[in-house]
Image (cartoon, rainbow, N blue to C red; front, top):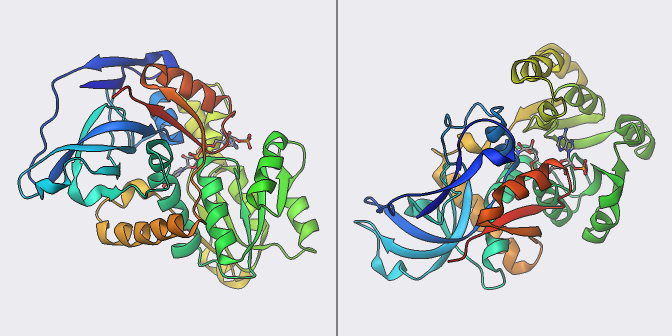
Length: 340
Ligand SMILES: NC(=O)c1ccc[n+]([C@@H]2O[C@H](COP(=O)([O-])OP(=O)(O)OC[C@H]3O[C@@H](n4cnc5c(N)ncnc54)[C@H](OP(=O)(O)O)[C@@H]3O)[C@@H](O)[C@H]2O)c1
């Protein structure tokens, strides 16, 4: 098998392909011959040494793949061999063969190819948890989607539109026409406009009921101020940590310095709530995850879940794929494809 290894923390050129013996599925596992691999922002942070959950290098990251079941371990029905599936992987996804628990695989709907299927797990499960499960978004309510043109952003947009919400989204201006075509009601060019003033202007000073914010630091403070009474702020990332080119310690210290603390009495008096989401810490909640995925797959069938792959890179081009994401060029998902 081949794997893309983060050989040490650093620039995209630290990603190297290495060969090793094929993995053998343990009891309850399946071996997937991988066709496509979803890249996530967390992989970039891991490569840079800014993702505390990642294993120490040399390591193989990757949270999601799609492919064909090649063999199964003890206790798994062998008729599954040959099935096309997508799966959550706890690291090791950057491989052309990977073993995962039978519970972590899902069938690929007929309407999706391997690339689009690999774009589902992280983006849509995170979004489902943010918008539906914890954000409790309802018909007629409004949502501000930060990073609306990103993988999670587009997934949140799909779910919010299906719920009948009014959607506001921040992204760079070049992504606005795509976002409008996808149904976003109010794009905001956060690079040239103050999103807080813009939201307050567009909502007659009221603010919005739900904000999903993966930027972190000062942005969380501003987002909180853009909440209407009964508003909820879902925090799920710290993209801002990559803004500075200072050393790792300074980047993390700056982030902590700007991170707000929420006071229960203030929350109570403001009728606002804040919550956090980390899908990577949901591994023990398989039943919940399966239930959410069931709804997501129903959405694929009904046509309102629309995984969007911006570009596919070959396995050998993993470094270029990382650089493309870091240059903030992607709209939606970037995947790697294997030659198998
Ligand atoms: N907690 C969880 O479970 C979970 C799960 C998935 C993702 N996340 C987090 O969600 C965030 C987005 O993930 P994604 O996969 O959707 O990312 P993505 O598709 O790679 O989106 C990246 C885009 O974010 C925008 N952006 C805004 N501020 C940025 C900044 N300071 N640094 C870099 N990009 C910035 C840029 O778009 P513009 O052109 O609009 O500037 C950029 O193109 C990341 O922070 C990620 O770690 C968290």
